[in-house]
Length: 210
Figure 1 (cartoon, one colour):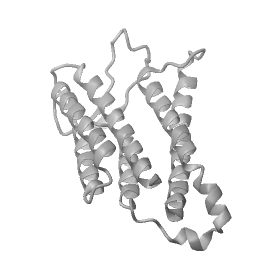
Figure 2 (spheres, rainbow, N blue to C red; figure 1 turned 180 degrees about the horizontal axis):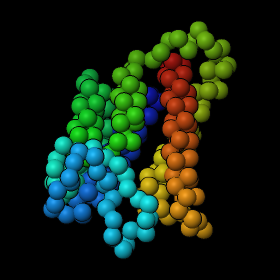
Figure 3 (tube, helix red, strand yellow; figure 1 turned 60 degrees about the vertical axis):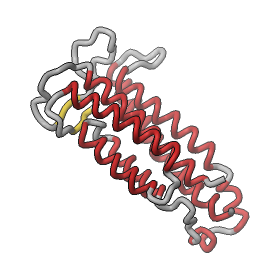
Figure 4 (cartoon, rainbow, N blue to C red; figure 1 turned 90 degrees about the horizontal axis):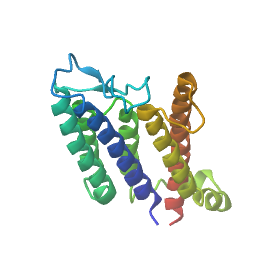
């Protein structure tokens, strides 16, 4: 099983999902000017959005919330579909990076940029295992580390999705304090990113074993 391919496809799909959320909330802000390049995807005044601290900063070259949101959702779907089905192709990484850049420019979110770059970097190593790990680690160590990539990826995905939910809705059972929720959001994102890096390393080691 090519771990690098699955990791790149998973993180790319999650990036698309996050971008789609940005686009949706931008679109429901309506047909009016963004008043600049830097915007908040989540507008104020929606009674069904209970997270008063919601904002989700984004950059857009489209000076209209509705148009920016619709284009962002379209590009986000394309990014997710490409990630899930075509990341392993010859130009999979290049196309992903290009579409990811367009997503950012249309309003897909600022926080997605590091994940876009990281996913692209991982995708460039699909079918190109890093032989360095054979020199750095014993066969027994490689075998143990290789078995962890899938579990780490699952945990990372859950943490990132939790951060995404908290960023938009600010809901967590039993927690109502805005500062606590905001801290939980950042901690979930940071932990998810760190665990993702560990999964990537374990995935590289796994592919060397193949």
